[in-house]
Image (cartoon, rainbow, N blue to C red):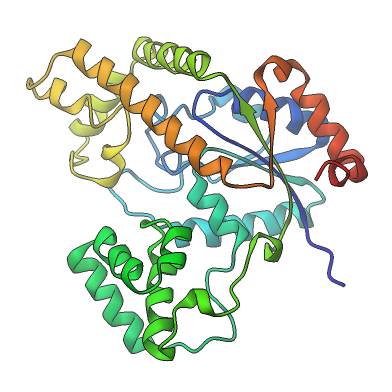
Length: 315
């Protein structure tokens, strides 16, 4: 029987306190942190992405930060491939991988194979579907999957385009929906995950988000966005569609008021946190640490790591 590498994950909503807890746990257990955030991959985008500071990064090794320039595209598949390789190196170095972030699609990608073994494939069909994706977009492709395989469509996010294409390819090759075949589940994950999230009452989480946005503005978020635009980063780039960036661009272009933009950032971030929570609450592997136990989160995670029986007994 193959023993899976053990991996800790601290996920959940933005502004829930993941960074502080992860640093405490990492220093206590000897972890290396793998950032699991679709915006923190971009260089020079530090304030608006709540990227760990240089001082925080100096405390423990961090990976998967500052991977690409803001004018580059970066797919989920590219992140997953690099994350798998990074986890392998961390484990081989006799350290513990600690995933930290709120991008649920990245966690899903690390949990399930990128492909579905044992089922046929056809490069020509896949290329045609990729061309369709490029022409019509991810939502249209996902709608096509919804029409033929609602079960698979419900499980796959529209932005998980590689798996959506694979599901459509399987249907075209076999005449059966992917959901009719034996497909991987979380139990087939390549890692033995211990996943946690911090559970805040909604009003308190919203207050934390509002305070974080105000702090970002004090730290120079407007100047960060201005610097990116002045350096030649086009406002239409994927990176510039992130919260805190897209709202401030009209301000810098003289088309919006700063205070209105700040309120839009707060509202957008609260809505994003709600979507994150919906996503993560569907994942039954995650253990939610109540916010009133936040001061004990480090001890809870360390105990479960050092005594696996204490983890499995609660599953």
